Image 1 (tube, rainbow, N blue to C red):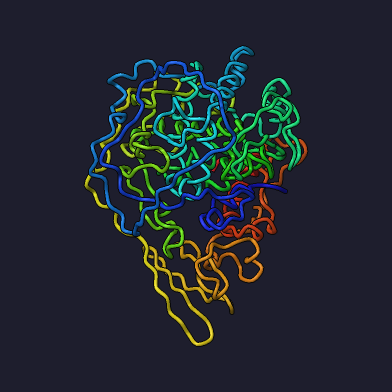
Image 2: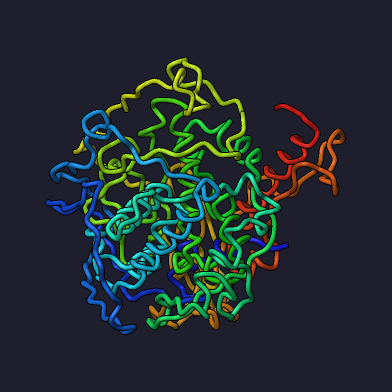
Length: 549
């Protein structure tokens, strides 16, 4: 079984410690104070821009800023893009599923992708009319630690998709982003024309260029690689995706908060999509996955699911909960998921944008909706907070009412520190006690090892005397990559007697999962991943047995 080499780097420790199969960009210092001014592009129609990539060599200038783990809130002028939808978003773009495009439109979309790829890197992220596909890949790799496995995941990628959509618009594409309805084809996705030689190309092998299609090595398509040079892309996936029914039962039906819906983005339908369709190649590399244009179809699908969940109840539109990876120097001891979310903090990478700016897809900046596709299956959902029935069919104009998003957080509402740490040393070993919120975990370090980084969920280790050097793959042999607290979740699936595992003729299949060896090799959270697997397996068994919970 195979899944989620992706998640190796989505964990903060893995991203910063260089075990991801791709180099981490040099710029790692973050700041959590929003700039006093913001510059954004809010116009939907952007004039075409014709440019040519002039060089494969790029130079990046990085400004390093010293920061602390104390979070300050923004007092900046509100971003004009957060204007309510009712003012100017009267004709939203409809993002369509790949199979809803004509052959001419499919080729037109690919042509636009190639045009922005041909641009030289602009090394800026505020003006999408100048951005190259390489800019998107680079900043995603640079910010992978802050944009995955924590609360910023969904809003970071929503902002990224909108900037990418604006870049496509600037070269003449007016059809909006395109998504792949993965839930409709969990076992047959490779048979789609998307993966044919006519369009995105079929699966290849690790270390080899894409064998065919309009992005193949033979076509001359190249994008920025982790070593700073232009390289062909590779794609080598296989396995079973999350079905539409499983997504509905696991995420849409029962989630009543943002944090519940996001779940574990390293092992749910998001992580599954990366590794099943990307394997150990570009789409399966959490830092550099945007190198493969398939990334944007996958993340548009993830964003559609987020959009569907938001449509269920009015308060879901601005609901934003959970913890962020602190925006501080990665060598600082406290770098884990310890900073509570704040909708007014700036989003990493996307200059001038906050989470609040991308909550409502009907505001002037986003101004889009999604088409209905075959993976939009019927389901039931929890009752809304105000007692209203959830809107499980946002395409039904008879039940879809004009929403007014609840008021956002106060601009001067301070974010409270949620984590603290302390060291207690003994004669023969070192004990580290970590307190985050109401939970305290104590770790006894192995002989010859000391704490490298401390997280709310785990601690990272390094050999004693190795200094501040960032962990490498070689040093893992000396000291375990991470230590985690005792698991308090159910990680072994005991099938109820009235249920059976999927058979050859079963309608629903288990999604592909990681092996124990893969989890251990990558220093991942075995407890959380296996708990997620148990939940998914039982849901699949219940669906096959037509059991309603």
